[in-house]
Length: 340
Picture 1 (spheres, rainbow, N blue to C red):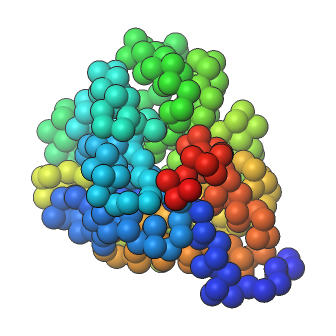
Picture 2: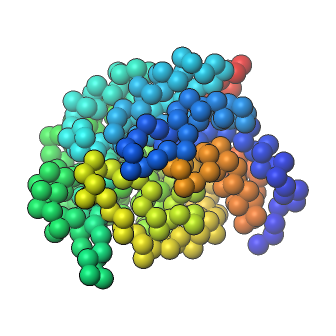
């Protein structure tokens, strides 16, 4: 590995100019998950750092509603939002998707679940007498109210009517991108295939999938047009800490979830995979907003600095943090920027 010349704090700041963070979880949230910044603060900080835009994600509501409000109170900057299909919206709910596409400034993404994918919800739990026990075993009500309603992507069977309608809705709005969500790797592969078959042009493989997939599996999805997402939150020192509590019920707080997990090789793993896949097929963001981590702008600068130190060329970093997000959001023309 040959380190790029001129690495410096100033360079990491300069690479924020025109950058877009596609994964920001600013407040509001549950009291069990304190936030570091609210949406207005996140937008102002990003604007003042020279960034072009941020994308809000929210596990409880259509974040394009938040974006609509922020865009009216923060001048000279643009925010976007969308819908994560969690159980608060009934899981695979075509009506929620249809509404999100027209609510506020309109959804820019539809994600197939975070906590409410079967793959993730089935693994949430806590240690009891030294043994990790899933919530579905500890609380029968959790199984009927959450796990049984969680999202599953059929691996062999044809999509059910709800999934089929959602795929058609996304395909009919080519400015909207599909996010795989926190599904299993096998489900993500299937979802990318389905998206391609239904004519969906823009796809993002969630960092939750990226982290557990093999390089070959990521390459298969990238070759089919999906952008492979890397978020700093997935590779930081706080990785073993459950950073988001999704459930109102205090007994469902999965405080031991992931405690055996390490950072998975840290940012070095992300850098090596980005180099192997090629920057044209990858995208970076922070997934920041929780109080255990820095403010999202600083998180993005730190991610950029880490990638510089791991040998990622400056031009590749610009593609990861600027060019690819611009294409994802349909902002290729600089004239579209509210700052011009």
